[in-house]
Amino acid sequence: MTDMKKTVSYALLLCGLAGCSSSEYRTVAPTPTLTISAQEADCQVGKTVSVTLSVSQEGVDGGFELSTFIRQGAASVTLNDAPIGTAGQWVALTGTDARITVSPQEVGLLAVSFQAKAPDGKTSEALELQVSVSPASRISAEALCDDRIVNPGCDDKIPVTLRIDGEAGRYTVVPSLPLGNGVIYCDGHIVNDTECAAEAETVFYYEPAVIGEHILEFDIATAETSVKARAYMNIVKKISVKSPLEGCFTFRGVGEHDIQGETVTLELVNEDLFNFEVAGWYDAEGRLISADATCPLEMNLYSLTDFEVKLKPRTVNISRDGTQTVEFTYLIQQNGKPVAKKAYDYRTQYIADYKVSEPITFRYEEYRLDKGKIPPQKVKTQGAPIIPEGATRSTYLWRCDKKFSVYLREKDNPGFKFNYARKYIESETTKYYIPDDVKMQQ
Image 1 (spheres, rainbow, N blue to C red):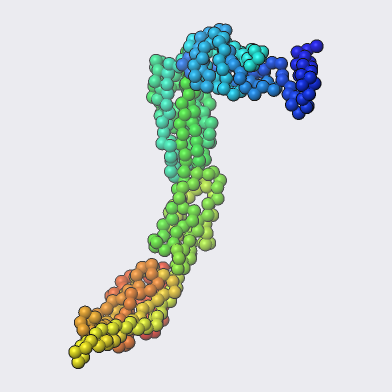
Image 2: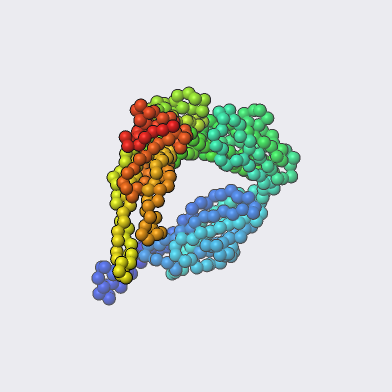
């Protein structure tokens, strides 16, 4: 009869003698099972190898121990970052999984044996980790370049400086491109995946074929050792749009893009209460790219980046708002008693159906109460109410007699063309229709 049969029979006998139910019966495997995440590895002296160990045994939840024995070579070993002996000593495991780190100390084959033990003393089969240990690298290297390249020319070659610190004067280098698409040059020759000679400092040149992230990797070797160096760069297309105005709208699609083949659509987005429309999208040379409201672009190394937008003339209608009454109460003495009196001012303003993109200045004679005097005095001054840039309403006009006589003069509004016949003024982008109660003058 096998050990398993003995264990099961013994458990059944105990249950029968004690009168236990079948729900209290528990199967226990005879020995624990040990697994290791890797049994072979390569490493240099001064580096480390990390593996994961797992112990399992049906019917046993914990209380395992681990033995570590170096059969060949020399190394230090840690269990979950704590140093442990390597002469076969048993150490307690916390749980059923463990992280083992092996640090080789000499060149050659390193063989490390592991074995697990259950709480009842039964042991697992031994597993061995074999590490091929090479000499520590006596060279170091770094590859240097700009990590962000904005709007490179189609034929631009980006310098990448490879610096090697070591004993040899010349090195064998194999440049490769694990990420991206492009051509690597050295001394005018294409060297992608090709052995080439390099000195302690050598400048390679990279000609990208796509936008986005690129990684250049350099495998550097001498007769005794080797090392790798990597250079990272992101090729970015930055789209900008020039326009005759600022602050009235924004452009969707502008900014940086680094996804090859992505479709980016330029679109004018009006700010609140502006009504601009696109007449055309032009490149930096003044060539029309699109006459539509939007301009779709496919992102690649050859994509255009600098645009200018021309706007359709827009129309803004200006009208006069109603007159508001502003009441002022003051006290005077009559027959030795204070008596409340009232005085009235009247105000109005001009309103536009859309925000103005240029300030518009009116002229009139202000006739207003001076409330600093009791009773208030009526005072006349020259007024210049204005509809500020980005507003739809003018500052207030005041007349205590409600008689508003308002003018719009060319000399107060430079930059506008005055059309007296059709009663509008025109800027580069906007035609403003003036209400009939305003007199237009030079």
